[in-house]
Structure formats: structure tokens, C-alpha cells
Image (cartoon, rainbow over all chains, first blue to last red):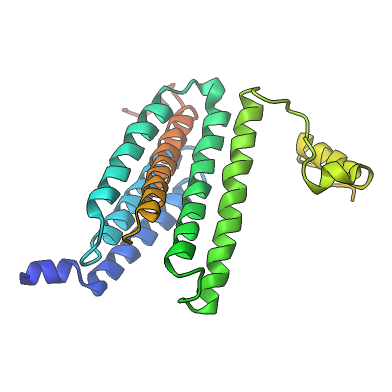
Amino acid sequence: MTVLASFVTSENFRNVLYIVAFALFIYGLSGLTGPKTAVRGNRIAAVGMAVAIIATLLVDNLSNIVLIVAGMVIGTLIGVPAARQVKMTAMPQMVALFNGVGGGAVALIAWTEFRETGGFADVPTYVAIFSVFAAIVGSVSFWGSNIAFAKLQELISGRPSPSGACRRRSTRCSASWRSAAAWRSSPASTPSC
Amino acid sequence: VDDTFSKILLLIAVIFGTINVVGGFLVTDRMLEMFKDRRPAPGDDR
């Protein structure tokens, strides 16, 4: 391996790139605080994200690089036209879908982690705890966002739909579902329960 | 990761993650563009 290659794949160099990335995130986010600088801030944050992804791909002896690049190409081919062509009036549904796939990615990674470590047998407890947390939050985001998409697209009714335990014990849950619905319809008020 | 099923899961995860990142930044860009003041301000040479 040449000197340059060993430098680029060294952990120190990657950490420098991560520092550059989060500096760009913070700078970009501060731009999002005002309408005049928001577009620029968002683009700066996007550059930060690109730097962070490149830094991650520089990990030495990265296995399955072909699959990773293939996934990024497919994701770009789906994401770019979807974001560019969606009508502004359909934007809320699109944002719900984009949000959902982010959660889906997290849940799938946690699932694979579970499979690859013999059900978290080979990892420290804190890793197992955070992986389970990621699995729960990712799954809730994914399915919740898909339901949000279906409601906004008017594929299903927009009314709150009790499920699982709520369906069985209808009296107790209906109150909380009603207050949740009231809270959702007027974000300024707080749930009464 | 060597297991085929895990590879499939992670490929979908990378696709999902890329859609999330690329799509998220692009729709944000589109929406923020709408807040731009299209009338050139006095002294603004854009």
C-alpha cells in the first residue's frame, strides 16, 4: 500500500473528515435560522453529509463495496426524481415517505446486527441495548410514516384508527385516542389526559 | 457480512438511507427556494 493510500484510510484522517462534516452541519443549521440564508445553509449541510459518507467509505478493507455503491446508486436514482418531480401539493406525503425510509434503514441495520451477532450474544450489553432501541425507533418511524403517507394520500381514512390493545379494550383507549386526535388537529393545545 | 439474507437486508438499508438523505436535502432545497424574495431589493444586483 502506498503512503498516500495508508494516510487516506487512516483513522486520524477519517476523524478529521468527520470534524469537517459536523462543522459543516452546525454552520449549515445556523443558516437555516433565517429565510435569506436557509437555501445556502441546507446546501452546506448537504456537503457535510457528503463528506461524512466519503469518510465512512474510506474504512480500510471495506467488504461488499460493490453492494454499497450499488445501493447508493439505486437510492439516488429513486430519490432524486421523486424529490424533483413531486408536486408541491403532494410534498407532505413525500416527506413522510423520505422520513419513513430513514427509519427503515435504521431498523434493517439493527436486524442485521441481531442476525450477525447470534442475537446480540457476541456484543457488549450497551451495544445490544442501543441496537434494540434503534430497532424499535426505526420500525415505529417506518410504519408510522407509511401510515402517515397513506392518510395524506387519502389511501386510508384520516381518522385515528385504534389497533392492537386499543381495539380490544375500546372504552379506556377511545378516550386517549380522542385526546390524541384533538391534540393532532390543534398542535397548540395539549392532550387533556 | 457474508450471509446472503443479511446482505439483502443491508442493501435495502443502503438504498433506504440514500433515498432519505438525497431526497431529504432536495425537497428541503425546493421548499426553501419558495421563500426567496423574487423582487430584487434596491441595491441588490442579483
